[in-house]
Length: 309
Ligand code: ADP
Image (tube, rainbow, N blue to C red; front, side, top):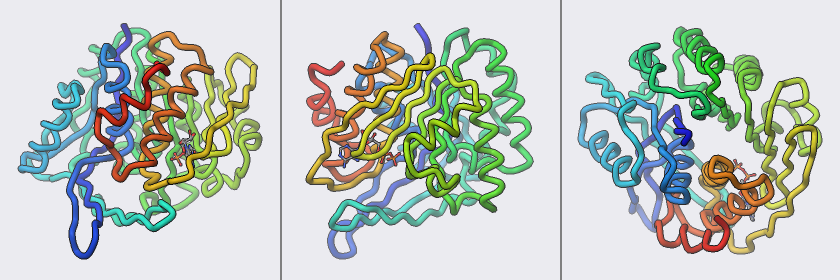
């Protein structure tokens, strides 16, 4: 059975409640996807590759990984750094405003720890997932090493999965983000872009424009998320448009795309066809956006997937 490795960052999440009250949790795109994949498909070996500190938050964060049955042998410990943090405020329509304190986070050091030695544990057909956020937080002087390691994984038949997840404030310039994102697409076997992200980064505003743009890359599978509009998939030259049932009471859109990614990939790795995988992923995302927070309670999540996986 394939193992899947999610490379990137998990942060301390602070969520504004009423008045000055804050609720504290843990979240981050690759972590959210890993959690939802493992919950939906418990038999899949799901790993996190990141770095935390030695402080109490880091200990609680890694406990959370373990509680969610994520493998932590590639969760490294920095003696100098602590995890990044973000604050999220949601308006009445569910739209989110984020503030981040992650410029000096432990996760930025991951390439200091994740070396060629660790590549030996990857087997043919294992899956390596990273996002535009995973890329953006890498120190510039560590990028070459990252691409070098990715190439080695690619050469050994590991499936590379990429979600561009563009966050403007994490990049020094748009040009830099563009160069790195295009490079990521060239390594990817599977890409899961959201139209919103590529609208800001590449001025691509429809699924068709995203699909046309992606033709220049050698993708085995392309899944284009476009909120409540549709999901468009391109696989072996066949394009399919999957209808999405819009949710009326959107509470918080945080991690919709992450939940989608985790469940879609989990379903594909468990042998589901593309249409079934999209249906399950869309059901997961639709449930997540009806509840506050990136990670919703396990039972709510699993109930929504009943009969779909
Ligand atoms: P991201 O969160 O990465 O920006 P999207 O906004 O496209 O990505 O959302 C990811 C998935 O969440 C969509 O493909 C869809 O399945 C689901 N989704 C998002 N918004 C809605 C909505 N209003 N109603 C139903 N499903 C939605």
